[in-house]
Length: 207
Ligand SMILES: C[S@@+](CC[C@H](N)C(=O)[O-])C[C@H]1O[C@@H](n2cnc3c(N)ncnc32)[C@H](O)[C@@H]1O
Image (cartoon, rainbow, N blue to C red):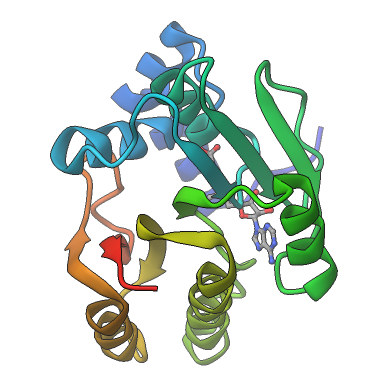
């Protein structure tokens, strides 16, 4: 067995004790992250029966499971990730890098003219631990989502995007204010207090 460093051992212990991890296992959720989307849904109610939802950075599939439950059989959930995602009943999966045009084209083809009600992005870059590299990478992931929504989100639709507090986030907030009639910044309780992560939320897309 490989030797774990002090910090990764600590992470494993904290993770196992985490009440959301335990609850997610109990409920058969693929990740504790599903609770963050549940808490966003409790507060803003952006997912409805019959909705078409795209879940970017979806693996292992916690958000997609929650979205699937909310949209019901009449709705549609498309999950996109760089990584292989195990099949999930009622969820269409695209394996691809969303920074590449080919992945957006594949998504547009799959949608076949249907416009999306809600785009969710929980994409996060591989963190190096160097803030000067990680922060611009995380901002870039939000920017490509903002560019894509112009092509795929219906006017009146909503957007939920994970961001990491730091340089560049205020500009993103400004772009949300311009593109959506209402915008918010929300940190669900299920999001670790020690993390700079929070979610930018736009409601009623101007288009
Ligand atoms: C925090 S995880 C998502 C957890 C997921 N929301 C859940 O509930 O299980 C972030 C995901 O973003 C994906 N990701 C990061 N950059 C990406 C990119 N450029 N294109 C597609 N997926 C990306 C990663 O592969 C990773 O699976």
